[in-house]
Length: 390
Image (cartoon, rainbow, N blue to C red; front, side, top):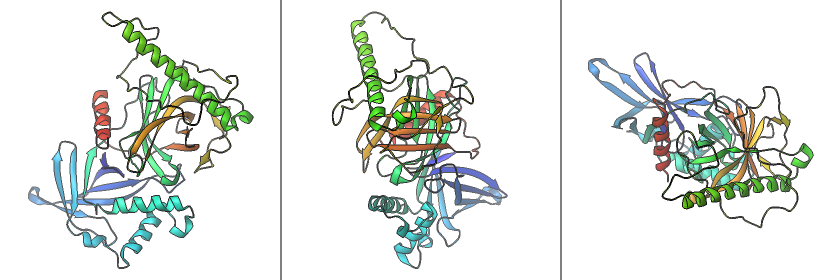
């Protein structure tokens, strides 16, 4: 399986007779995360006799035309269209934009009343259409699974506000879980770690009526964030005190690959709301939720969601951070949030600072030969795709 630089989830190669076809996989139309993935052919290699082959670009609406493929290095290749005029339409860019909008979003521009959303959609069209199917592809692996994982790792379709649906890879790394963007947007590009979940800090939500208050949820989450900050400070102080001798850690040593530090930005707009803590963090993520059990769940008033059809019960919640940035990935920072596990195939994340909710649903498409040869190879792949946009 390959990822096309910075936008689409790509590519599965199938041998169809004497052809090898590269398929472009697209998320369903926003905000229907439970719908299946969409796909269409992007290029085709016609295998000839005497070890020769011809390459055809299948982008656009005028049928297959001349293209080129170049092997860059191991696990990386590029495609180039040699007849980009085949991508143009008689009605010019306006017709191309309206056609793209119907295919990408399943609607017309007149259906989108939000001015900011119109701006983002136009930016996305300009960004993606400039390549004219001259692209670079890099191999991606699916995350390895372990019996102790909270749920089975893999690819998920998620709602990202006005950006529409994006594909995220959920993977587990010892005491943390990561959501890595496979497709990106003008703010956070593909390859970046969109969410990080601290599996050592479980959050007990209040009753449904209390949960409807955003201030109540905010207070609980910020108290957990302060606890995380204090624990990190104690670890740093202990490392300094133990310099030159074996450090004595009060906690179980971390298993698995080394984890990146969680950047916790300074408070914006004052500290937590006063009041008693409604819940304490439970440092025991190893205890799985019982099958069939759950607690009622509802979004707090004022938290926006693209999909109102989210589950009304959840298994468990954890403290996490989400990556936000300005256009062009400017001023990125990690902000506090809540990871909500609904079931084996769905989870959510409340972005506290944005007052926004993302719902994620598992990608059920089957990808052949996508398993990592080793955990180390998967970790290296994550580093490589993130370095492309850092």
